[in-house]
Image 1 (cartoon, one colour):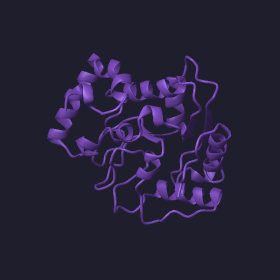
Image 2: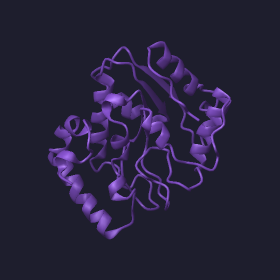
Image 3: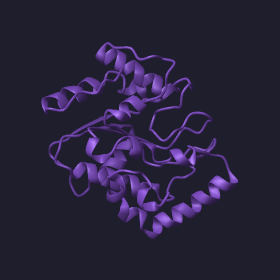
Image 4: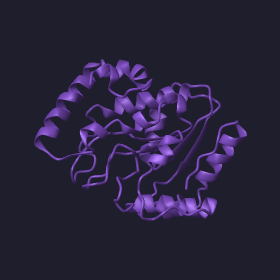
Length: 228
């Protein structure tokens, strides 16, 4: 696939300054080596799934993650989501618990795929899109941050209402760095601790982000997200 159609929708045009940069070419060289010499997640054909499944003109919610899951049969290019039939990891189980408490609906605890959210306009974007097996943050500061921050900056600049869900210091830092030049006034930015078992009890549980998101969208004439 040519670089011009790397994603297959308007993201190709929006991200073209990044794709054409020297930093991205260096990232590609690094990834070619990593995929050739190590086990890397997700599969190389899944790297851009968040962008592929949620074109920029369809985005109504952005959920920012850190980097992909580091264990087999999990990462598939969507933050917090895992491939079927993988059981939801602890952070995702905590997300399901908050959905249940907030909206009084229950998601299947056996399904960890969030593709249905992506199809509805929820951009599930990690700040780093690849990782070496078993080594969290192993592809940090290799060039992905420039691309994902560019995408966040673009979405923060559009006039239509978008909800940004920022869970944990990492996601909040990505958003703040990307929007130093200002963000649109029509957006809703919600912050909470990360849903990890280490921090969920310090404010993620009870944050009410899912109902607040839908209330905001409906108030602005946008269809709510079916989180179930």
